[in-house]
Length: 287
Image (cartoon, rainbow, N blue to C red; front, side):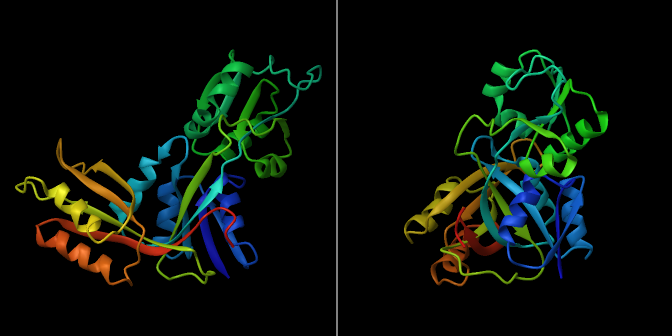
């Protein structure tokens, strides 16, 4: 049985998405408190794969998680998928509280990304509440469950409310209906998966400092071959101020003829190229 590490505790969107992705397979889900712990568990062989959320429709890249993939670098990306992030207001209804009345709430506990995804609802429904940020949505739900205080609420999944025996005070409170999160699966072995509609590759490119127009040359290597880049993002190398690398998602496989040739051209002008993975990409609803 394969063991899957995810950002815990039980009930996070990461676990929901992993259960969706591995539906029908016999696997064991293992929670860890920090994304660094999730990754390290697979590096150490405690788990077979790690589930890492790296991008959200509303908030964009999860920079800490991308940095973990880049800086650690021991595990290749083996697959990616997209999953809807449906957030709910979770807690204990006050004995005299009516549905839709949130005036008793004084604090909302969740991860900062989830709070950001629900700003409009929170501003209108609980303007009096303060926020406490924790490592995951499910951690916030767990804290609310243990406190037993109806003035506290969390933002989290329906799964977490069920697991911790709390009420859905308000359902689907995200500001946008198209709130999706992109997850990657990292591990040493290729998993057994169904055929995907799209193959992708992710690389890191560091430009030579003494080559004016190097980024233009990099992009040209893909453009004239008609290779589509679905994402390009600069991130600091953390070595010195003004020094960046480029994180690039490519809609092509390393098994193709054109992509290895493009990477060879980029390296020929003095760029450093590192492959993070070449993998199948699954959209939401794709079996």
